[in-house]
Amino acid sequence: MSRTSSRSSFGSSRRGRALQRKPIGARRKAVSALIVAALLAGVTLAFFWPGVASYDSVVQYQQVLSGRFDDWHPPAMARLWAVFHGLGWRGQTPMFVLQLLLYWGGLALFAGALARRGQAIAALFVLLLGIWPPILGWQIAVLKDGQMTGALMAATGIASWWRLDDRRLPLWAAALVLALLGYATLVRFNAAFATVPLAFGLLGGWRWDRPLFQAALVVATTAAVIGVLTPVNQRLLGASPSGVERSLPLFDLAGIAHHAGPEAVPQVPARLWRRAEAKGCLTPILWDPIGDEQACGYIVDTLQRTAPGNQLRSAWLEAIATHPLAYATHRIAHWNSEMRLWMPTTMPGTGPLARSEPNQLGLPSPGKRINSFQKLGYSLASSPAGAPILWLAIAVGVLFCTWPARDGVNGVAITLALSTVLTECAFGLVGVASDYRYHCWGMLAAGLAVLAATGTRTAPQRVLTALLGVAVVAAVVTVARWTLPPALPPL
Image (tube, rainbow, N blue to C red; front, side, top):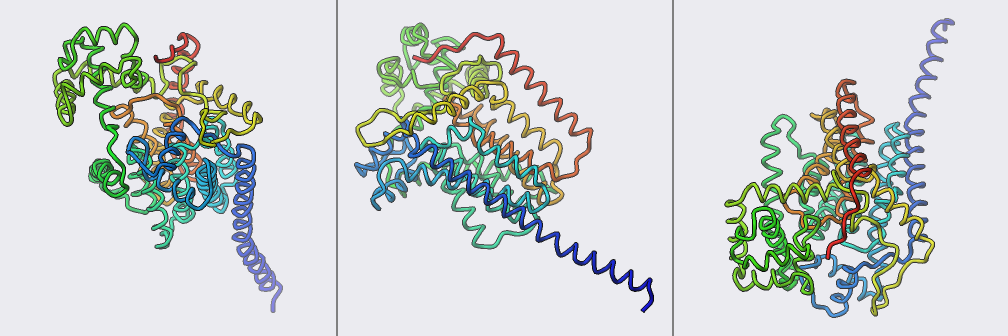
């Protein structure tokens, strides 16, 4: 053998060994990400044990103990909680453990898949995003929002383990993803705006060549899913009707009366609207004062007499059609409040909870050790960096930079960004309160979309345009925080 051929064979051998080492190194990076995520999950469980039971948690646990469920709180969550209770695991702890394990399990798989692709820095930031106090601080509270976020994160992580490499999911994994998305849909009435695009994107159902058809299909599917939620909750899950579906019409009617005058909603005497106006019950921040018997409950009582049952829906639609400008002004004002765009630093419902709601049901609180973390969560959530509108702008920027999808990474990034955009924009139509916890999934999905998109090739001009758009939103939010007085708490 000649010296040249010997060197050629030696070079080929070295290249062959390098090619063999590369996947081993990729697997090691993925395993390292999984191990770090598991450690973070363990630390989180220990630090926040046994979880925080909010007011909603206490009410749901009362239903678990009594065996009587209604649909004001998600019966799917209460039924699952009752299973744990029947197995002898008392209190809020089983649901706390469940939502944190789903949360960290999904983050682990997402980070591991990125690390396996060579996006080690992006994988690290996935785990850092998981411990960001405004999100994690709310994730430790046993609430439908935490259950939804945990289930969505787990579904995203499982699907992304294959989809980030542009591979089809095994049948068992696809079934598990669908089950998790189904549970997330059942625990929040508006979760379909997040779960439907995830179902199409994570399971490989997008039609990039027919965007209008795809958009129409997503809208129709979302509407169909929302339409069957009440029958599923009441007939399949055995929940008694609570009238929760009346919240949105009541809130919108109050907003129309506020902007168009009391005569715009003749079902309630004008003097009652004026009294509610004087007491500050007609606020764009949330609907609760209208439903509070001690505050402005007479509005609800009057509407129940004058517009019972489906007549309330008719009155609502008629008021919207008759006063579209007042309705639009009301919805924009509420969406601004939800998104915390032109809003002050201090807003009710922002800070993550550090203590459980006082109760006689044996639902304890974590130790005082979590107070500092939750205070940091409140400070960051109140800052411009914590404004949901900023994360929505980030998601829009990802769509602008990565559409249409060319491979699995693009597809995952676009899917997560669409989930954020549809979820956050839907609040403009169906939102009735401005609690910060409603936005945890939207912010988390936007952050994950950015990190997935770091593995894609994008035109620099698009990136600069997207960054400029995010910077403009950040500037507006910052000016609002500096100049506006604190928001008064609702009655």
